[in-house]
Length: 291
Image (cartoon, rainbow, N blue to C red; front, side, top):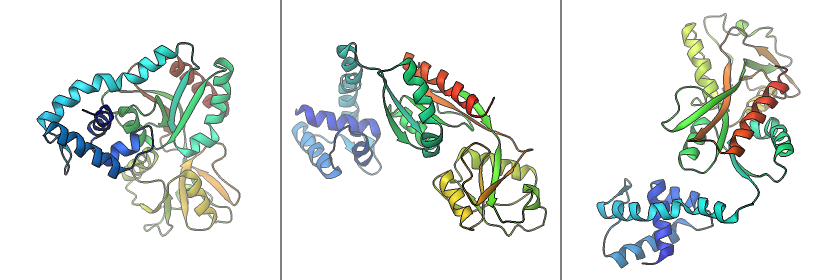
């Protein structure tokens, strides 16, 4: 058997398919190349290792995966062990807003304690970060925390941020309640995707109040929400925090709405680097909001 073919099969089996494996393999390789080499492995073994649609390992594939998984999954750990005094590393996942407005201050504080720290960043919202953790693609995630975490994922709340509506600066709205005091709301609502924790929390509260107001436009980041509000496309859902309302907009706090909890998620036991990250993340969050 070709060891490289076994490595490709390991990624395919671990991530549930060739396309998912292509996104996770830590070097550039296209799906057709993976597929061709998996076929070569199956030819060499005279067996089928998995069904393609839907993906499912055969009994032979299960046997092979159980045999090779400890070796390939253990390579990062043995690399760290053999490198000994190598610089500490941390793989961080969080939304782009967090990467731009919050994370630089955390990393500055972290590097005062760990001068040789090396880190990498991945973008994503809560559900995506949870999948990244389960796939061992990141060490920690920073996100809004709503609902229950998947089995194996732990969390620690850092701070709670109040929700707010962002409106065009020249709009006539003086308070959020003025928008839904009429029987029918004609103002378009701009939000993050409805699966986002903040959107879910907002809609839960609106249902409690018997108010129907659903997104007219879903956008990929808070920056896009506020940008489209500034251009006059509607009213946006955001958080009342520094640097979230650009020129041409203003915030209407949702004071009697529940706040959005933000925190850190991780798998298993945090490494010493991860623990230090959580400490600094909490300190910076509270300092930025004057808590």
